[in-house]
Length: 332
Length: 269
Image 1: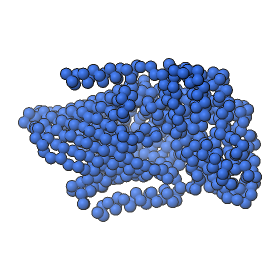
Image 2: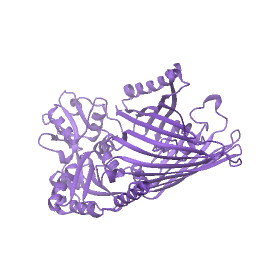
Image 3: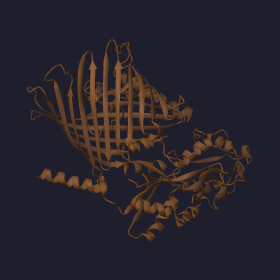
Image 4: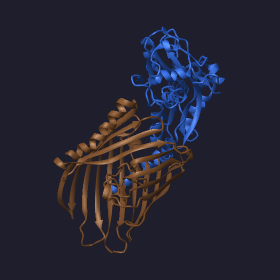
């Protein structure tokens, strides 16, 4: 339990400091993912579980126009945690806007977003994680520095990062000597079409190289995400892709419902036969309630996922996931 | 077979929603632009009885978010769209197009009983950041100043922050209200209060101060003499087309621009 308080205290101190000392505008918010998962292995029922998959508690102080911060811990159900609960430190960074004479840019420092592939703006439209996160090619956040900015006229975005390279779960002695260097670029040549790519590199001990190509198309109620991912770690090469079409039915039916599909293919080691797998997901997202800016506040997801293995001796796994995502916030 | 029928139905519905012309328009956003949008919509529907227009406020950020999400055809805004918002819009297939429909002066208002007639932008900043808390420091009586601001999400606040606060924070204890009307009403009913509202919300119930020696008026805004002035926008997805173009043409017509003048703003045509 002490681990909880070790992590919670700094957050409360930041909160108290921003509220009482600086008089800064501070947004406090929570997002919770309540999930029911039922699993079938080779068609046979293998059990089901209710859980709190994530519980993000965020404090986002705005000190002034140039300096903003975010502190985010994740409370979640964890069989190994004390009293069934776990805690992760997910974000803890400050953004310094326009430090360099580059318009619309910022430097992020601390436990920051990992600007790689689709992971940094993944909105969990499908319950499953982004491809690079799911296949453990890249962690969603990491310790380090990033220069992030918008291309002129809103034609895209870019980021260059220097990170530990081990993700948010590893610190201290678990971090190797070599930092990870990332570059990310997304361009929107015409409204509705986004293309981009990312690369990460870390030499010596871990010898990691990964790159991702990302595409996104949006027209009216139809949206399509695509990602191609290659990972090369210690001479083991993996590759795969993800495509995810979404159809928004609100304009046609008046009900705020989205239909989605997702197909993932991943081969973790291209030199070994029969170790790949693919996932097919289909589901429905129902937005019960949005705030005045259109951000979902209460959001039900019902999705079925089948995992199939290249190894013919392995059996298919089916999962039905029902997830209620809800969030609330206030600005002080 | 059932799945095939469902697929065909969804494909047809998708096609219809992509290409169908609409005879209704949804407008959302800035409460500053709201009086123009409301009056223009009413007059427009009198002429075009087959067309319907729904108008709501919420603030510039809310209107732009609605345009980006496809929940509005026109976003009213009292500030220019941000690069972040343009990027988000382009990702979603929306191409924000700025239509400047009028100009507005941001009037600094006090309760009519407050014996102060003018203020400098420098002192205004000091009042709203908490450096000056008593009217005697700006030539008034020995009374505490009640500062009334717009809320953080409003375009009016964004403009005030840029032109007056220069990025500084509003002091703790300032009332943060959700609309121009709420600010005007609260200033009217609260002795020794000070607030800021769009020119269109000026009335005899509040007293507009001279700012850096210039009174807010159509003439001073048009001539560029009044420093707290800004353009007012109606953002559309690309250059206006179809029903939206018919409405925007009306807003820019002599009748539409007269509406802008009648509600207290400065016409652009």
